[in-house]
Image 1 (tube, rainbow, N blue to C red):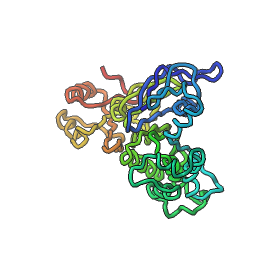
Image 2 (spheres, rainbow, N blue to C red):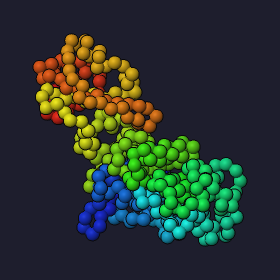
Image 3 (cartoon, helix red, strand yellow):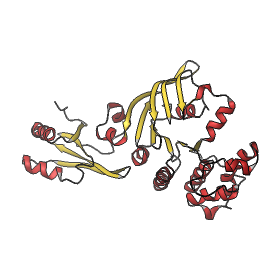
Amino acid sequence: MITVRNLQKHYGGAPVLRDLSFSVEEGEIFGIVGHSGAGKSTLLRCFNGLERYQGGSVTVMGKDVAALDDAGLKLLRREMGMIFQNFGLMGRKNVLENVAFPLQIWASAGNGPTAFLSGLRFWRGPSKDVTARAMEFLELVGLADKRFERVQNLSGGQKQRVGIARALALYPKILLCDEATSALDPNTTMDILDLLQDINSRMKLTMVVVTHQMEVVKRICHRLLLLDKGVAQCLGKTEELFISAPEGLKKFVEDEFTLIPSGTNIRMMFPRDISQEAIITTMARDLDLSFSIVGGKLERYLDDVLGFLIINVPDEHLDAVFRYMREKNLHWEVLGNGRNAV
């Protein structure tokens, strides 16, 4: 769906994106993650031509974005819905009018609403009028009963649902999400992520999710790209990167636990193939050793619940623990003040 090759972007003499190459596959949820200023939103806007770039190429659905004229860009953007951190809704219009607005604009720019709507690809039913089309998407996001509400009366999560419905109104092939959950509380964030995952599954819609929130990419993204100052630090399947995190990702993810200053702290990851096994108990019994559990966490990665435990091992027993974990092919890393494994 999207192919990026050796992409270069700068403002004046300051580089923003540096030699990026990757692809986004049809139907996947692809995450672009990094701190503020990493170039995430700029990269996203290169996909739909809102930002021009100085080198390399961006190809979207077989079209070279840099080669498109204004009319071509307009058609491309119709195939690419977009949702924003600040919702981008019109305060003078109610919920239904906000969702119907892009339909009305495209209808008025063509040969009338009937001809325009008949050219759209519906996932069910024949062509419908603008109001019925907008209501269909409000039902999808669970806000049909709020259709006559002013948007300023809605909660943050409800506003983002309206934004999603509006972005889907033209039935795009790609949905671009620019920090779509950054303004929401944690519970509402999870609700919106569940909705996006459901839409991806039901509509087979390709999604590109820009975020600085690691819980977002863990929850819904099939693959992720980590950016730092416009440079790709890592690229791959989400679960694999977090189980065997490269150095760039380790620096990005801050440890949430206070580590014991003596001994060696070890994080042990539990992928799906061993997540149900009593690894810690078995290791302690097999080695006849005692060690402290510093912390742990279970997290949802797409449809799996994976986790990790952080244990503290006295240094005199460290070699035996390292040897045991290698023999069992366990996933682990040394944290904090402990000496490195050899």
